Image (cartoon, rainbow, N blue to C red):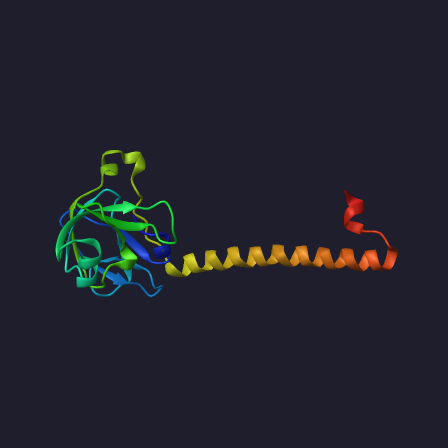
Length: 171
């Protein structure tokens, strides 16, 4: 599971026993990578058990945890970011609020691994293709806004000239 904000990057699934580093990608989003360079997002299934090492003092104090803790990766339903961890004391913390450089060992894959129909596909996304798709969607939305504006302007002109609305007469 990788937060939607990382979909512009290449990604791959995590493996049990793998040691990952939490880092900030160029988009500003926090995510897991296998090294210090955040160019490929490593996706972890929800409900996977993790061993977090190097938890910062601020997070320790705010959430009542130690420098090394076991946690479960969860997916929140609300908010701009969805990926979070739940500690054994019940505290939930977004990845965005954890410290860069935190290391994570994947202890078990999520419960979803047992059900192949619910597995996340291992997709390698070409950043250029994703950006092109996003640009195309934005251009389509702007075109729709432009057409609506043009119709509105045309309706105002025809109403001013003829005294009737050309748009309303069509319906």
